[in-house]
Image (cartoon, rainbow, N blue to C red; front, top):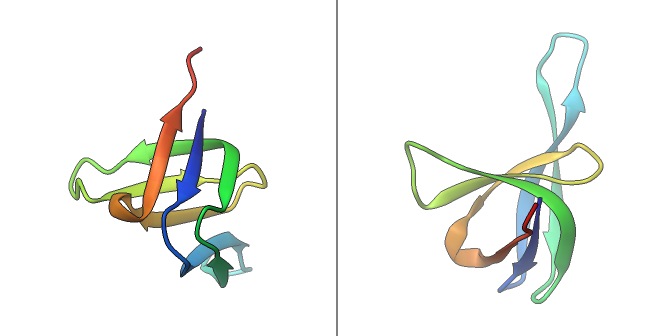
Length: 76
């Protein structure tokens, strides 16, 4: 688990679930500079080192540029 902090105001696309055809339902969400989210899963992309996948506590998922967030890893 990690904590992330947004370094700039921005809009991110978040997958909030899937429709009947198993297509992702995407919502655009505005996040503010210094906004923090605790207890998120951060998965580093093996192909594109500049992007991380973030799964929020409610199960929603977004792909975010590493340059726009600060990541604090929790120790197990």
